[in-house]
Image (cartoon, rainbow over all chains, first blue to last red; front, side, top):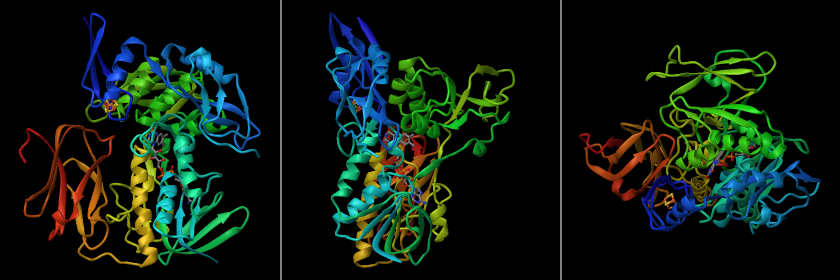
Length: 120
Length: 422
Ligand SMILES: Cc1cc2nc3c(=O)[nH]c(=O)nc-3n(C[C@H](O)[C@H](O)[C@H](O)COP(=O)(O)OP(=O)(O)OC[C@H]3O[C@@H](n4cnc5c(N)ncnc54)[C@H](O)[C@@H]3O)c2cc1C
Ligand code: SF4
């Protein structure tokens, strides 16, 4: 049997979770809502995170446009994902929600812009 | 001279929400004045996610949250004037502003909403001893540099202050290839959300030193070393506990101060405890027709609450534009009892506003098994609620039925521990 104490990061409430495993089945306690249960199991089996960063922007009002992964990616890919993001230059105009890097590292998750930036 | 029904000063989430809600409530002539190139306020640099869970029921990044409100405002008849700095206002609701295109502007309004946000405390405000080299930044300045301008301010970083901004910057600098050597916190607990301790520090193995502070900064042209010492119960550094960090940058995340310079020009009454205006439950200040909301009123941790408060300010500003009203002299004062550091609003007026009102407050120490109580002058308990943990870093909110306060002049909000006598 395995037991782990976690803090749920899904919302600002930050519930203290206890995840126990017995014969391959997981039980989560301490969560206030369903999302905490999903997080607890994921966190001990295959932890994932959403990445937010910026990309180089050409021809816009600022030299950077903010971006995010449009879904969580495996935690161990965080720094590789940052490198991929570093290699892309976006050209203005760009719209919030626009895919700027599809299927990053084959995860099936896209990187999208999070702010509309017009041309100047 | 320009004439508007409503002028909103500041185009951050507070100003945008107030303008949007005033428009929804029938005001047509609305002007938003913003000194930056774009609206959105501090959210433009808060590229991380965690915004909007309450209001939009989904997790957005700061820029996305700002843009949602910009789009809502764009659908109204409100005018946005950017690059425009407000210099002062008068009790008669004239506004003096400056912009590079039109020069000096005088604007007359029927109502004003103050939504100027806050600024960061700087090194001077907390007086760290030591040399004065380059490489000392407030965390928010470093955040603006990295997220908007694309400059990483250093490679080896020490961060003083474990509030959310400090934690978020620890992760951000790490992701961009800097080494964050330590986050140092004076208090015995972190001021940040638990989720940020996990996803910003633990995820990246960044050490957090509680009950520690920076006691010296060394360096000629650039920061070379930062000395960190443990502090005792009175927050005094303990000799012999010094640790040396070889670093080129010190980030300060030591608190925010509401930006009330403009409010002062009109003689708006300020509360020393919240550092913002004294307001009634409709968000009106002591000057009729002038309302305040968002971080200029009190420092918020969650933008969703900024939005709620600002929607209310906009709604009552609209009411005032239609039919100016004054507050009754018998508004009820909210006193701060044990462990409560401030409340917003500070006054509740039964003759106007809504039937219910939210009361925001902060505690001045960590309280486990807390009992939140609002007491009448004769000792009657008007409201009571239990809460497992209350933290100074987290704003608390209770909702009151105003009719329960009938007949009172002053009521007192206090927080005690469950096993302590009332
Ligand atoms: C670094 C950081 C991280 C945060 N992280 C989170 C988070 O994860 N989740 C969350 O929910 N909340 C978060 N918050 C809190 C939230 O972003 C703020 O509470 C919110 O942005 C406050 O909105 P505001 O409109 O009152 O102030 P601001 O956003 O500061 O806007 C004020 C605006 O007024 C303008 N202004 C000021 N003075 C003048 C003048 N004289 N003339 C013209 N314009 C003027 C400013 O330029 C600015 O645009 C964070 C805050 C910070 C600082
Ligand atoms: S369990 Fe639910 S309420 Fe608790 S932190 Fe997670 S998401 Fe938030």
